[in-house]
Image (cartoon, rainbow, N blue to C red):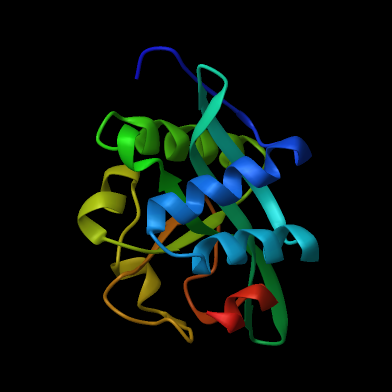
Length: 166
């Protein structure tokens, strides 16, 4: 991962992020999700990996609410994580997620969920077990949770409106 810098995404990165995410997923669906989350103001943290002036990686965490027992709890959802196909398997995705989780925890977030490959996301501490207590439109084997301190273990996961279009 030599020569790669991880930084907070800027407005000027929007078009590069869209191109990168489309390349990483080989379709526009996830890039459209990123654009919608940005337009709706639902982004909590968005980082890019830059190499030689080019955006080669991207991760986004959006606001997620856990609703239950008449109360709401703010959490975050990791989606999407993308790395340019020419730069995959070089540690960029791992570095992006590790830096993002460090920043989120330092910023006081208590719960993060991801819908993704358990073999990949378990390296960051995400686990299926803690997610089983939540109800969600996306409840399946790939829904995983990571908690830092006191966080709910049950309730309904309510994703940002942009996810309804997936």
